[in-house]
Length: 220
Image (cartoon, rainbow, N blue to C red; front, side, top):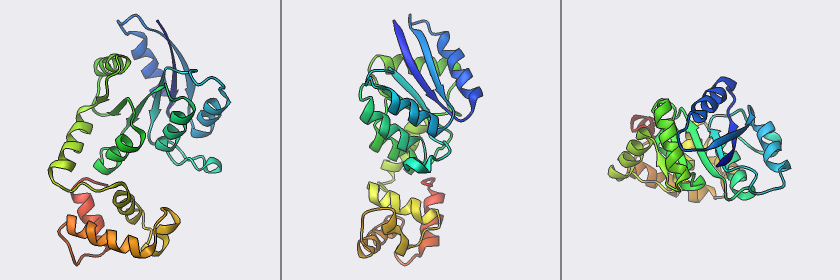
């Protein structure tokens, strides 16, 4: 079976490594790869391809340089474009990030076929994940499984807006500026910050306290 794979990573050596590993698959797949090393070239490949089934699988790094002209800040933004234009393509996100909020957001909003933390897997595990994904299964590497489990077991589950607010605060964005990033009024944001502080057991805490607790819990 011939598979067409799009690999997107700003480190060409990583792409070559993935290509070599997949070429050793024992599952009878003939792999044909197309590569992109930045969000702009990836966007052009995706949008200029007229066929929605142009690629069977997309391997996508999360940490990519932004393409501001198209409001693409990272691999997650690119993945959402891929889902719209190539809905049958299996998206596999590879990342060095281990923050639970980030990993949860990827899983919740992108719903990829696979999420793998780069430090988790060997060549053998990548091939195993590849096979499971091709069989229609969802694959999460060990760190992904563990961080999501901890997030829910500690009962500090936060909805997407609260997670965005925490992330924006961590980026140094003040409350008055947050509505520029998410569609929410300042009063609604303030109410959500009360909820966030309650989750973190710091009801009288400030933004620095929120950041400190989020970091302590590995959320950012």
